[in-house]
Length: 171
Image (tube, rainbow, N blue to C red; front, top):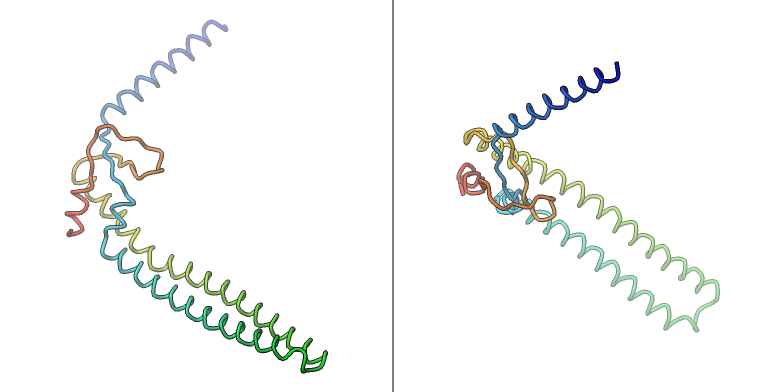
């Protein structure tokens, strides 16, 4: 009984491996450096430009508020000996509140930038995926592997879809 079971398992494995080998031989695989493709899209460059402007705006606001706090701190330190202890404590609390306000604003700015990044890049990434998929289908490829650095794929040979994808997007 065990011998029959062993033969059945061996037969099943043999058939499965044969089917897998046949399937692999028939599949066509291409590659593309998706990161490079995306970064060269005009819509990506436009999105990154908008994000840079937003980040610069937040940085300017934070810098101005920080300068104001530093100016007040300097003023309060120079006047510290001429005012009451209660006034110094009140001023110290005011500076702490300004510091906390700056931190809160930095956190809010970071969240808003991340939200805007996702909003601007989602359509770019979707368009890139659609173009790559469309070109791969036109060329008869079953799979497209991302050959970007860090993607875990090392390419020796194989068809690179980059030129076809750029042509399809109009570059």
